[in-house]
Image 1 (tube, rainbow over the protein chains, first blue to last red):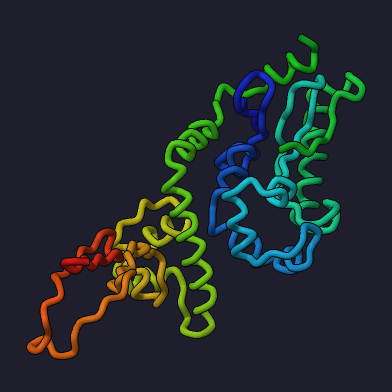
Image 2: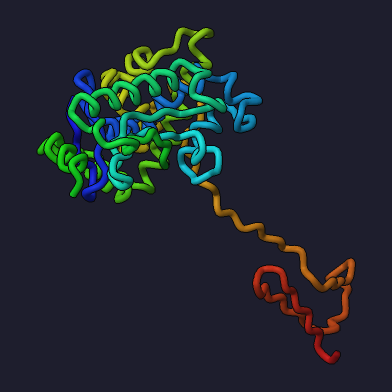
Length: 139
Length: 148
């Protein structure tokens, strides 16, 4: 795994061996990809029809990407570890359509990635500093 | 700088994320990329709708348009700056409308705002005056008989 600087001195992202892009770049690429979004919302159609955020058609849910609606802001999630209260390292992200991450496989996978990255830092010696790693949802 | 911050900086790759470059490109081309995105969504939804009816796929669309599958993939990724020719070909194959230019028509009414009457038989009519009709802003009609 690599840690890639995004911008500033405080934002980094993991780049996993099986991915061509770091997680920050990969997620923004996906969220701007109509083909990905169409397949995703079609596969999760039950979660957007009378779902946690209300009722949307597949097309409506995709087009939300073009505006700053409340639902869009709420369901696009970036996950990060925070170190020293100011450095963020993005571990992944998801379109979270349910109340908790445990309810769907694609968000459970993100939980597993957060834990894997935490382990990575612990193995690199950051575990000495108590409580500096936090799991966060930003954006 | 704390020990943890130092470790992060040591672990960080010299490689810079390409995100910023992508974000700048998206921002600079926002107007047409948003249109391309909407067109892509319309095409994708139509392909999905037609698939059980006629087996429509991106590959079939490419074949029927006589273009490469890669070209169609770029279109449905919302990254193609589409030409009118390409849009028309997609419309023809899928039987949908993707692009319409709103017509800027002006409703012209020739109904005069002031009523006037003429003698039933002009040959027998006594000249009572001349009239002029001017269409000011199309709908104003002026009748100015002599001697009135």
